[in-house]
Image (cartoon, rainbow, N blue to C red; front, side, top):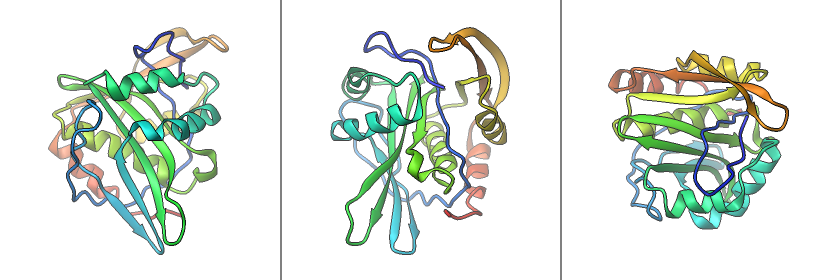
Amino acid sequence: MTTQPSSPQPIFLLGLQSQDKLLVIDVNMADTINNGQAVSVTSPSIQKSTQTVRFRPMILDDISRVLEIDKLSFSLPWPENSYHFELTQNPSTLALVVEIVQQDSPTIVIGMSIVWIITDEAHIATIAIHPKFRGLGYGKCLLAETLRQSIQRGVILATLEVRESNLYALNLYRSFGFNLIGQRPKYYRDNNEDALVMHVKPLGMQYLAWLDKLGTSSIG
């Protein structure tokens, strides 16, 4: 569900292959600017027994782990220089990671998302959860947080592309209000599969409140 950029400049793409449940997001902190990318407005966390699930801006030190997740998730992963470009040269980028913080264990990044924000529109460029952590609620939560932080930046429309054959992802996006608006023939170069173009609008305070109400299920 992703397309490999031919240069450090981004190409519109999207990938999400998780099979997740919703979980609570507690937005209560403010972040500082990160490597020239769009400022992260919030840094929420979710407490689950002895572990905390936390969202934060992606940093350069995350790239090796993000590359691992990308390669395990997509047949056309991004090259390393594309992530470096997003974090250091693209001021319209919102790049997030989701990580698990456990007592007496190293913190581990389990997912990532990148969004391009232009004026009041957001394009979800890539989003993925590590295969070992799918089906536990992290993917939907990451999508919700990605949309949340986009709205906090004034976004009223979000778009994405998804493989035509990825029925799970299509259903997931529809559950978030995304509608089909177009098709890109032979968009994915590995097998010439078509991409479906979807968007959701209007985004704003009402949609943000709806995202808050999604926190009725727990990880697990």
